[in-house]
Amino acid sequence: MAQGTCYYEEDDSEDDPVIAEFPVYHSRRLQENVYLFQYPLEPQRNLNAFNIKKAFFKPENQEMKLEQCINIESRSFDGGRAEIIAHEVDGPSEKRKPGAEVFFENEIVDKMLLSSTKGVKEPEKYAVAAFTGKELHLTTLRGIFQFRPAVPHLEQALQRKKRKDENGAVSSDEEAGPSNAKQVTVKFKRNDERWNNIQNNSFKSLKMKSASEKWIECGWNEPDATISKIEKLKLLAENLDNTNQANSLTEKEYIRLLVPEDQEQSSVEPALPSHVMSLHALRELPLLEQCRLLLKDAQIIQFQQMMMLLAGCVGLNADCLLKALAKVAVLQQVVFLQIICAEQETMCCIYLQNISMWNVKKYLL
Image (cartoon, rainbow, N blue to C red; front, side, top):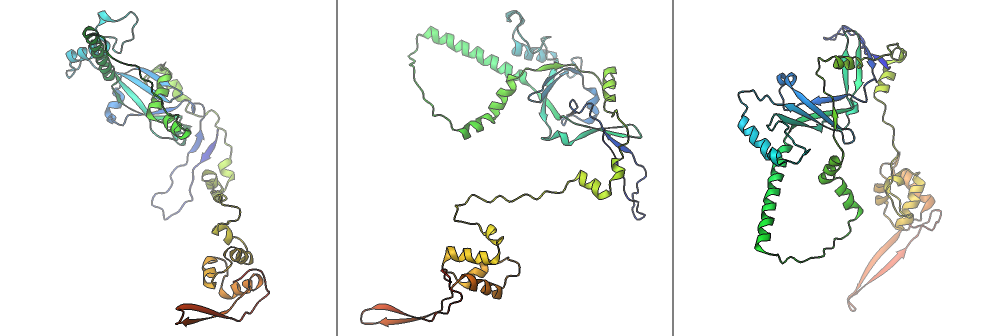
């Protein structure tokens, strides 16, 4: 089993110095079967007073429920009301079919259900510790369940009453006479893939998936039982041989094993047409290639605009940009003159061109 030793450099200025060191072992004997039960609605003083009658588990959906016994001898227990509720849920015993499943076997509300919900999304990041006084043994958790009271018997009583009312309404309709109901054909539009994914992840779909799996009854053992004590011993690692892994590593190497460095991920460029390049990809090219591509797409562009687009390049200034432009561009200087013709009420433009070219190319600046 993996072993590690926690230690710190001694510092006289520390107010809380290290007084003891213990080896840490990782036990894998029960890491596939260890679940943590939490009862967020119960006070801590009542956790040891739980009287669990049965336990049921769904391994595929990772669900669990517990049957907790109710103290019917308590002064605050209303036996008459408990019998009425059991009668509404399961119906009268004389009208039940042989072998029919009932919720309350004793015809009285003598139990309550505790239903589980998942406490965290990634329980494997948590562990349960067993300390022997000289060694610390850690076992990874398979799941974390939080239990809260559930009352499915009230829903059963409501459905039973609803069916009884519907049967009474049907019998009254038959006595009144035949109905004038007509058959109607209804067509539904075929759902697309996105809608199907939403439906599969909906609450109704998850509920149906959970209902399709049968409950597996599990044995429940009290903490002081012999089998419980034997299972607790499996929280201790078997192999206690020192691997010297912690002693052979420096402090920085040990920290890197615990917290690996973030690997640099290559940026994924968005899908663009073949003749279009993103500004981020453009700035990774040499300055000469950047100028050529900008002039190829823009054809005519101002010098200030090029300085703004190429901002961020290492060592970029006006002189460097002019030297690069001299190799890929044509500088055209134009004198612009406007003459207003009052008679024709039109505007004529006369261009006097004085062109100075540097290493003439087919691109124009």
